[in-house]
Length: 84
Image (cartoon, rainbow, N blue to C red; front, side, top):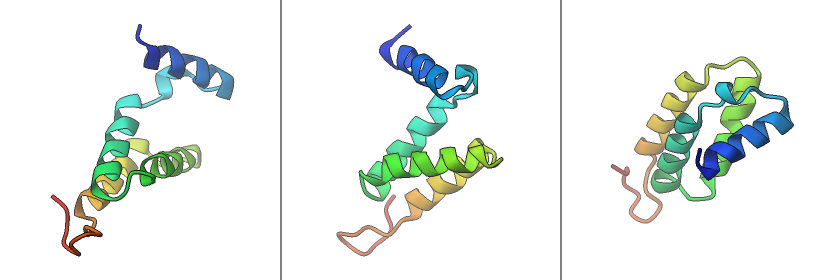
């Protein structure tokens, strides 16, 4: 078990969530794409939004795919062009 796994187990337990229900790879991939395609501080905010939506019944995988597509198509602030 690595440090991330240990943290997820402990944090999920504190939150009353089964660690098996935490889509770690989905959240990390989404955060990476937002940080690189939009703006770094957007990563934790987007992860929070994903969690809120999941808590309200949204499918996290489906929403993460939509948000990733948005991030990858987000216009670059520096050039005004879309990012790759």
